[in-house]
Length: 68
Image (cartoon, rainbow, N blue to C red; front, side, top):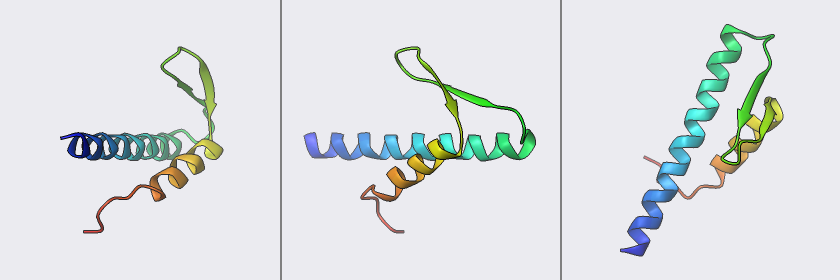
């Protein structure tokens, strides 16, 4: 059961990462000059820019997801 749970958690994390990247690309295409910010679970706010997007993309490429 633990392996199945871990697999579901990993897939949810991957889905969340894709969602963050997609929202950023869409927002930047609509508003290219507006700064964006990200607030973490501790309430700290960070500038959300291309460097963070590249980190998300790198992290997504490291997931062990099926190639359909």
